Image (cartoon, rainbow, N blue to C red; front, top):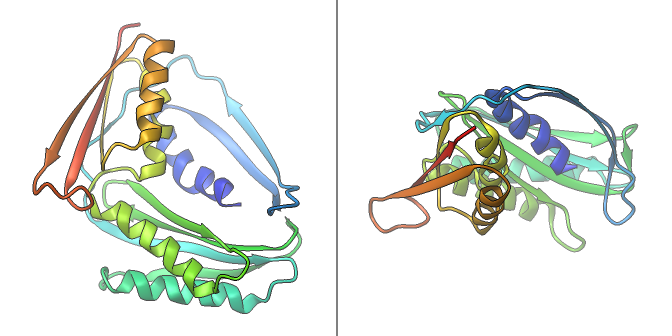
Length: 231
């Protein structure tokens, strides 16, 4: 379920900056271990992708999300996840209204499950997400805290994308006509792998420069990815 939410709420708006257009309809949500989810994706052809520059994050202006339960799980779990996530975020971000809506999935869910996704938006249009899925024997508030801490970790580095979107954008940078620049946090192993593969599949090169202000990898280390295509 969280993959679908991330696709719609974070990935889709960001790749649209490159000129990609697609629709995604989540018809049924499926939960481990039964699965059963169904998604319909319609992609519109595009002749070429436009380069993107994301180097200024701006201020965080909005935080919202969904805490959900499905199947036989009680609605109270969704409320507990939401409340715990809000409390955790409030410790660092006090000035914003945080809207994490608790939901009971009924008609469009297969199996039993619970989880939460939280999204932060910035004044320059950057998007960040934190999410977590319920686990057997783990209290709901722990799930909410896990998602909130993931979001805060992705906000602290002051980059323009989160740790998951970072590697997902590499192929679009490689295929875009021109130079794309994206400011990130510490480059993940997934991103390094995506760069390695893209360099071998396309006429693509990447330069990475760091701005490590205080040698603090978690807080202030920012990297700049630049792609240069030669189509």
